[in-house]
Image (cartoon, rainbow, N blue to C red):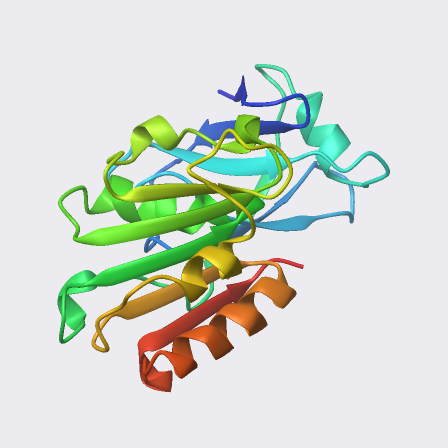
Length: 209
């Protein structure tokens, strides 16, 4: 069964039957409508224990895939390939349990999956958007562990870009840092973290173009 959960005018959660698909949090799937060649990659939004599969979709007006997904109704079908990807997250494999997640826009998807899968995780999430209304389901996170950075309106926790917030953030040098979002943010955040003494092998990235 397909269901859509609207978040904003252009953003929604697409929930699909999982059908016993096995995945690790942080991986992505490829979605397309049957009998079409147009497809798109989406990081899995739901947790490993959920009995459904969710992705976070932002509609692109002239896109070939997202407008079709927004028009889906119960009983419609989509084809799902995967899972794929190496942005996997198993916290017990890291030498320290101190995690920093930095996201822009729908780049919050893997971190939502991380927290759904490991709810007792020691983390801080910095999420950058333009408007406060784009704080996609922040209520699913510990409110003491999430910072909303808004670059246009002033209704978030910080008015400015995530990189501006990150510049003033004090970090332990053993922090495990995960970056997901647009390439400019990732490049700038990577340089900021290095300047703060975070070693390269503690920084993990996933680019959303």
